[in-house]
Image 1 (cartoon, protein in one colour):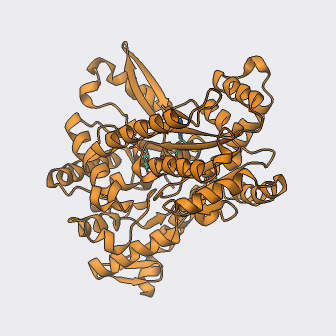
Image 2 (cartoon, protein in one colour; image 1 turned 30 degrees about the vertical axis):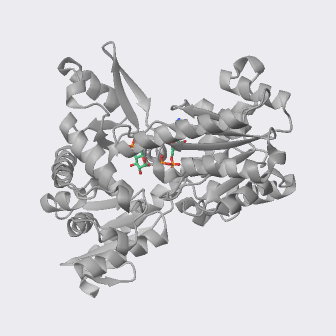
Image 3 (cartoon, protein in one colour; image 1 turned 45 degrees about the vertical axis):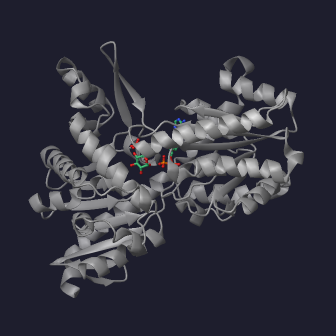
Length: 484
Ligand code: ADP
Ligand code: G6P
């Protein structure tokens, strides 16, 4: 049996060049952070975009770039600025991302975007053919590469190909609005196994296949020509041990070893021991409901003014896709909202919202998770939301309250969290109040269930289950066809 080839647009590291030196910085986002743990413990090769366009890559550094990537088990697909524009900022993030997250009005149907998406998917498929052998197993990831399975299948009909979608698959009524809907489905159907985070996304996909392509679908199998394609749900886990161990190490640090951020958090706790810290961490993305969350916080403070000076909301928003107009507008909206609310409500001793717009090192993420009494995550739509799982994993004394949107894929597995509808401000305000006053015993008992589940179904188990299903499909593929 050959090796596993992982393929995604975003590699686990992003390269940056400053003063002729190449720096590899960790990528943010669920795909990269989750798959990184799977990749580092295996012999796999990960193919993707380096984060630098051809125009940003000095030719004399090409070899060094390849070496820097090879050190991380990665190989690059070269993309120029025009390709990144049409494929990444265009079709991936101005067409598919909004559509699949139910922001139909944001989705742009541009023929140029689509043509570039097709051409770039072909580049990724060609890179797979070039860098892999017949007996390798190909694992394609996410919405940027939905045509790749079929493109690889055309050249290598017998290769085993898996595909995993890290974002929601929307209901048929939404998906059918895409002008290139049949081509996208056909691209995905080049796979042997297609995985989703939840059973709902799987059902939506099967329904689109049945209704748009008229294919024979039975339970979770699709019959196409002489092939059987399996579809299943695999909720992605986290590297539980990494977060738990980091939190244990964090707790053992002496004063001199603490980060500046941690010292700030500690001094806040010391000066206002009754104040609860409420944390939210997301990429700055409209699907995450950040602006609505800030509005809901203001609503809460107006409805329950007794909590003024008793709570502080920390918002960590990671810069993301900043060439896309909707993201620029959202950044402006959040800046204004935070400015207005802090301006109106701050007192000499209290600023209601601490807002950070940046990517932070892993240790600072742990500082925030471990210091916060409440994690408040309110996506309007989210394929999974790993931040919710990471927060729980770092709560080594089992205290802490997770308030989570029911629109996140992770809500299906995290019933012991306080689940809310992010559009319901009344419910959000009441839930915040409940979280602030939740007895420690209740926090512990809820988190015990959550932690046990997250520890058991970690990212390694997730990847193993997907790969086992893919291997099983390869071994029994012919038998399926003859039974049919
Ligand atoms: P998405 O994939 O949509 O970005 P997730 O919540 O599933 O949302 O995943 C986000 C990932 O990015 C998490 O693993 C989280 O630890 C990481 N992350 C979020 N914020 C930061 C940050 N400021 N710095 C570094 N990593 C971050
Ligand atoms: C989500 C997507 C990933 C993507 C990540 C970060 O997790 O599912 O495919 O990599 O967001 O977004 P970016 O556009 O920076 O790759």
